Length: 363
Image (cartoon, rainbow, N blue to C red; front, top):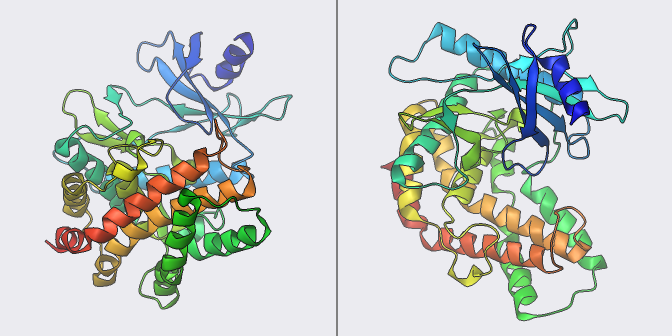
């Protein structure tokens, strides 16, 4: 703890004293702490040890975050919101330095981020009102950041959400794996085989010029969208490590995939997983209320994004199961197999409701 306080002291605001450093949040990639100081104006900030096994070039991650936050603030200054609050995190600098990070004697990479006060987040969508705010939050982020030239952002996660690449890796792993056939494994094998031909639908649209690269968040899960404690309105999209160039369809599909599965990714009751249409309606309504930048081609591929992102994650889970659970952490040998089944059942539910989902998109 003394070491944490010493590191936090490097990022503290002004000359305030660090009083406490404690674990914070439910993230499973970075180590996150809430720092409390004796400041009367800004008593808290967030201290994080970045996972450099996931982010191999952490300096580029920090550059992306700074570029993103600067653009968000510029847009809000030019066109202030009239009827609600929207906050942008600040990257803190190491005192007496222009650096935005600190590397300790163990080569751990530390950074400080401002704390957004009077806010809260939830791991799951509580109701349709909350769903609307989740959609609005993602739409507002895309709206504010959309004019940023993607050449100003580094691709810190090459290949992320490129489904054909994941499919190619799966085929390589499958050839090498010793497959223990079971009804669950056979279900996954057939599911992938039946949908392999459509895995490139978004990438092909991008290559044809129908979709274009834009700045994306990269991980728009529900608990990354902060709500105001009093109004329960969305006020920020946080955890910006995955900001990079990509298709906004990745963000939209991933948000709906994760939010509209009420049983969650770790349920053992995979047979009963379904895509909740009411939550999808509220999220899409919130998103589309502010996402006025969408083109006709963007609309055209929204359904495919929702379907494909569920398929993609299932494909990644199943591939890792076949490879011996080398990427996703597991608590038991078949956990990645069960995770894959959950996503494939969700994708199947999306396919069954294709007409209804398309009606939501175009209503």
